[in-house]
Length: 115
Image 1: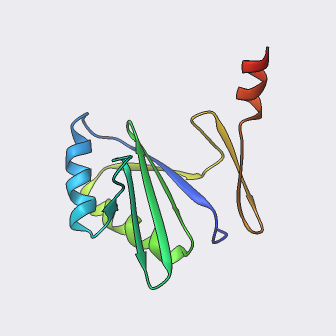
Image 2: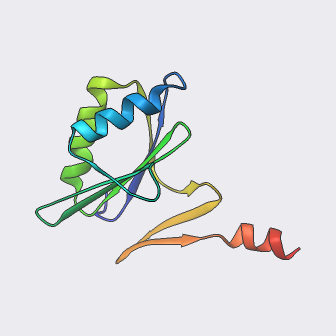
């Protein structure tokens, strides 16, 4: 896995899991964005990790693999989850790993709007 790739997870649990995972993330020291409350992040020793919740999906990205391994091991102890692997397509956006980061493309959505 390259250092700029992301993972997407499907979390399998009841609808009320959001409250549980929110509390869990806060207890793990993750900070919550003031505007978008389903956006969590941590920055430790120059290592940034971002977690984004959407319904029952969890998108994780970071600039260092250690953080992904850490959060994955933590999530295993608390939640049933399915690791869907590398992020390719999410919410109508195509993702592609490139040398300096992640390229995001909404070409399909753009063509639909223009039609």
